[in-house]
Image (cartoon, rainbow, N blue to C red; front, side, top):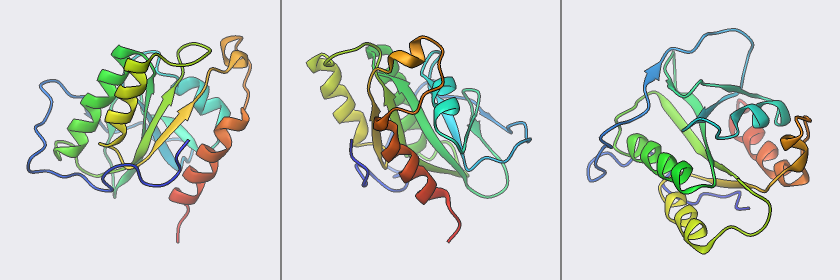
Length: 169
């Protein structure tokens, strides 16, 4: 699970074509303080599980958050062909500068099943990771399937990295 940069640290703009259909941009409901936004790029991505397991983030409700200053955002996708295509689409949207006011921290890919991922999906994860600043991969967590809030050891680097990336200097 890489914790360093895997792709561009900032949108590329020119040369990155925007997707035909991107995620909407919305002003999120303010309430409790959060350090970053979890942006599920499709339904069932795993945002609710991450929100319960990794303190500090809040669900952006499938829309790029807009607001004062740059909003720290973490894309979340399930490790399925559909989920990874949605992640690639969101990465293109960010990379083409179609959305502004966002500090994209990276992409979390949440396993969709126990065991080893099929090669085509592993290759797609590698491809998409080149379009976002960082990649974190979360394996299958049986406790989440049972509705139990649980921070697996595989989430520790994600928690550490996001805390480090969002703390004021």
